[in-house]
Length: 472
Image (tube, rainbow, N blue to C red; front, side, top):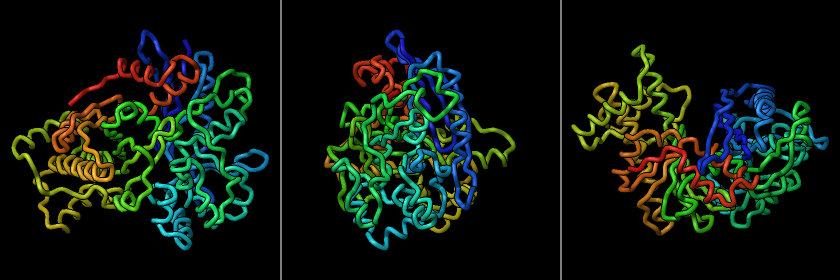
């Protein structure tokens, strides 16, 4: 029996989870979890990469006798740069750094947003790798010139573990440089923006063993024997692998955590003006599967409001208490009219007070304020669901299909209240779970590469047997 270690990296915390198959079920064991932060260095917001690498290397070393392989998945868009000697030039800059806007402004001098979207199909955001790279060239031309290779975060860690450079396609599909129709980098963007294609890594699919820690650049791991598997490097792709979307094109996926991703498996990438106008994005899933979805605010505002109210009340609020209150409210009044637009930028602000910005929005739009503090929870839940309904309509219009099933994964799938509201308002059946989808997807790709399962479908069957799955 071979065991795989998933390093599942989110933007605020990182987990190490060992997975293996026993008695036809996937068994999981968490062996590491820690929070990480962004730090200001040399005028930019950067990831504390030394600390990240120290934790990852330590986790591999501690579990080396037990595991056969390791795989890395992370958030999208961020990258590191290495020089001709193969050394990391500087700590990776974080997507939250405001100076990426300068790269976006630079690109828009040459190409319009619609032209860029028509080449890549990626939602236009100033945080995207393309704009980060242009900002780097503008702000630090010497550093840009020294760059031999740009490696996305999971590929960068994989390189340090093995000494081999590779560009896994799911994480590259977040860059705004990859043309998803051709499966290669956009020649037009590279030419028009005068970017050097040689600085970009060779593109590869997830699922192969790319090296071993014996040959890597981390001294403390060189005496160990652990293979490194290139999994779906983007945590979204790893998570979506666990949904029925991969085997049933009539099901939608909803990954609901701090942020939400709501979408479909498409026949092919949609680079149309219509997709651009609706704010949709295209990415690649496992085995080059085209995914068409919308990035949305998820539980962020809810969590923020809950934290603020807990401080005011001087006690913790359990989700059971919140759910019971909202369910009672639903019995008294089936619908409410004071909903907010969850995509209004003020609701994503880190600095703003959640209650204050909700009140501000409602007053501006002539809507009544909630009668008491607990009523705000219903406003937020119902507003989330309203936005999901709008996105469902947009995806149905653009695909020409009607969808009656949604597979939910992530922390939001644990909320029976949210699942029931979505089922009712969107008139769909809900499959909820697994909740640890990114790590599980990471592990299944490793187990296939190790020969522990013959197909991903076999792995999914074992995963569904072992994880809590609910239907609504």
